[in-house]
Length: 70
Image (cartoon, rainbow, N blue to C red; front, top):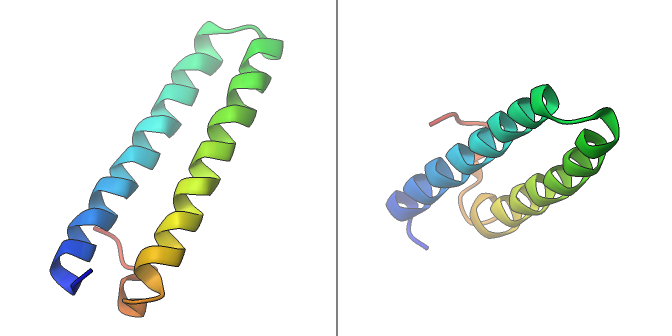
């Protein structure tokens, strides 16, 4: 992937992680402790996989994007 699409891809992935984090905040307010723990574990696994994919597919080819916001 070229640099320009990689930047846009990274932005979408970061927004996805932000949305999943917001969903967890909502779940924490609306769920029992046990239910929230299950959700947090599942969503945490998804976020970790997304982050690993981002690292493996974008940062390896475009290391300047690693740590750059936006």
